[in-house]
Amino acid sequence: MSIRNRWAKIRKRAEQFVPKPKRHDPDEEEWLTIYDEEWKQGQYDSEPDFPIALEFYREALARARAQTDPPFDPPPTFMPELMHLPTNRLWYWRTESRFPDVETGLTWLTEMALRVYDGIPPVTTVEFDELAQWFFANRDRLEQNALPNGCLDLGGGRWESGDNISYNLHQGARKSRAGEVAEMVRCLQGQYGLGVEPQPQSAQQVSHDLSPPAEIVDCETEPSHEAVRNANNIKEELDRTVPIPLCRWGEPWNWDDPAEARRALQMVGLYLEDYNDETLAAVDHPAAKLLREYRLSRTVEIGSSGYSSRSA
Image (cartoon, rainbow, N blue to C red):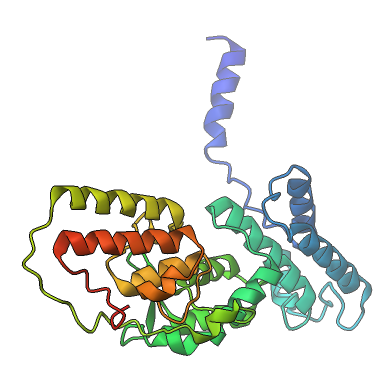
């Protein structure tokens, strides 16, 4: 073995005993550089508010650097026992109470970055405020269908505490979990389709009774194979006409359930006084026409679908 190879082997072995440098956590200004570079590379193009947040954070840092009471860097008298741990000392000094805008800006940027990395849909401050307005305007109606522990049905077997949603909405769009809670409210809208101003004129009289049909009429008529095929074909066309929200995880609408049928129609903007055949007949929309045809085909199939004026 040559001398050069021996030295290489000794150096490689010695490196195992040399302590690795500790991880360096970026400070506030380094985070600005990181996010600025990543923004220029197009990593956050899906977040419309990212450049707004970046400029907000840049200006907040500039103001913090320029102010003297309190100064951005800790004075010598602050926790002198941590002089050998400057990163920890800065962390204890640069708190939200001393520099609220800096903390808000960095949290806002980090929340959007995490949404991109985790595949959570974007949300702007404007949309977030609209979702919050919808949730609080319909909170009482939502709670009527909650579990005894206060959890709301998000669809697809997912549930979330109404209080948790309320808390995160009150925190605002610039805080952690803003994207997650926004998606929860979108799912609730897909589940219940409850209106909030501004609404279509007919939405003012929407019935929100989610109880099952009051009466199901028994019938001994045997369904024909043709009727069954016709009902299935119409149902498939209905599913193509009315979008299925992502929060339902691909679960199709149950058109035999009056409450589900109402939610589905509200997804396409049909907020009606009721959803019986006479009302749907006056609506110029393909979903309303298809639902009437489906109910008729089901009446032929099982004798009575239970969709009378009293139960719709």
